[in-house]
Every structure is written in structure tokens, then in C-alpha cells.
Amino acid sequence: MGTALITGATSGIGLELAWQLAEAHHDLVLVARTRERLDQIATQISQAAGVGVQVIAADLSVADNVTRVAERLRVGRPATGLSAGAARPDVPHTVEQVAARPIDLLVNNAGFAVGQSFTAGDLGQEHRALNVMVGAVLELTHAAIPGMIARGHGAVLNVSSVTALTAMGTYAAHKAWVRTFTEGLASELRGTGVTATVVNPGLTRTEFHDRAGMEADWPRVAWLRTQDVARDALAAVRRGQVICTPSLRYRGVNALLRLAPRGVVRRVAGHAGARTRY
Image 1 (cartoon, rainbow, N blue to C red):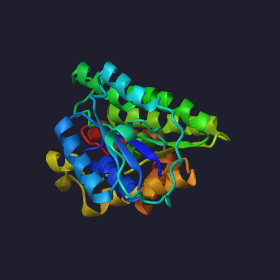
Image 2 (cartoon, rainbow, N blue to C red):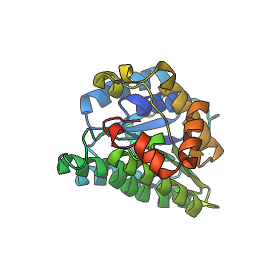
Image 3 (cartoon, one colour):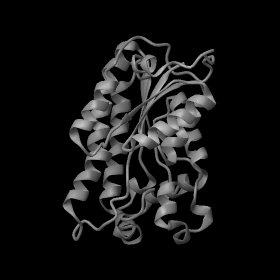
Image 4 (cartoon, one colour):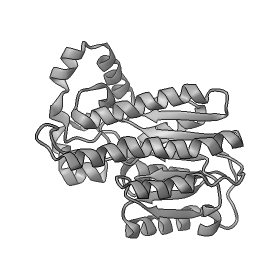
């Protein structure tokens, strides 16, 4: 049994990752802004899957909140590691027991649509997005990696997007940073027993898109299921794969974006996608 810390864990891909990891008998540390929602999900997962769940209510756009999560990642007591075949415990770990366990898998998933153009938008909103999708990923990964290296095992899973290869505003820029950062990290970690994986989902059905009414904007074939994205991402982590793009159709989109002239990419997939979170 291992322990995974997931940011943005109360909805969408983050929530599905939490359920799939729990079903594979891993303890969880769930991070999100709303304590009530965290407590509700922690109870559901613990009762259904028989694992221990710690929650940390934190807004990752706020520096001292990120610092609190980073402190949790520095907990370093030895553990057995993350493996798909770990045996289910007879009794779930208590919250206190989970809080004392080191993190074997860090999932940097938290993010949100910027929802505005850069030139006419609010600079505060841009700073919040940058803090959550770039700053927090940087700080939390930096906090987690030394302990993982010292223990000789561990993994980081960063959630990027197919938009990383487009020109869809600052959201795409943040996700491009996540992708490149993960590739560089994976190279640096070679031979340590620690891996880094970046998952690049396309449009994925989540509560975010339901609330925004975006289903009508895109054909049904464009949408992925959170279950499939999470399954592919975790399989990639277990293989030590660096880049994971779920679904054949989005791997095709990814290839086209790489091959197309950047002028064409800017024209076809430019700022019009600024309100979309992939």
C-alpha cells in the first residue's frame, strides 16, 4: 500500500483518480478549497474502499496555503511504496496514521479556466491561475521529490492538457509549462527510482463543463470520460511513462498540432478557447 496526495480532488479527473487509487488500496491525502466537500468525499471513499483518507482544505492560489500542503509532502517516514497489487488492510488507517505516512504519489491536478481574454481581463484572475497551475505545481513537486529520492521510489503525476500545444490564451501557456516541466523533471530523475508523468487530456466531462454549459459547444465524439482519463494516467505512472495522451483521437490531435505550422495553429486554435478548460 502507498499514499497519494491529490490536489483538486473533489471533482472531475482529481476525484476519479482518488476513487481509482482507493480501489487499488492506497491511502489518500485529498486537497481542495472546500472543507465540507472534502469531508464528505473522504467519508464516502473510506467507507467504500476501506482506506485511510486525510483532507487538507487549501486554496492553492494563496501562498501560505501552498506552504501548508508542501509541509505535508515533506513527511518522510519509510513506507512500502505504490504498487497495484498491494494487499487490502483489515482495518483502514486512521487519519492520524495517514498523516504520518510519506507521500508515494503526488498528483498536481488543481486548475481552472481563466475565463477571460488577457488584454481585457482582470490581472488578479491571471495571477490566481498562474499561482494554481504553475506556482503550486513547482512548489509542491519541489517539496515532494527529495523524500521520494531518499526512499528510492515515488512518482509525480502532473495534469496538463492538449491545449498545451495550442495558443488558447494563458491557460494553454500554463499547461505548456506543466508539460515541459514534467519532461525536464523526468530526465533529471532518471536512475533515482522516482518518475514523472504528464497526462494531456482533451475535453473531459466534469462538473466544470456541466456548470459552464459547454456540452452544446462540442460534438459528443470530442468528449472523454473521467474514468478513462484517470485509468490511462495511472497506468502510465505504473509504467514510468513520461507523456500520456488518453484516447486515440486526441493522440491524433496532438500529432497534428505538433506538425502544423504555428501560424495555422494560432489561427485555428487561438484565443477563442480562453474560457475552455480541457
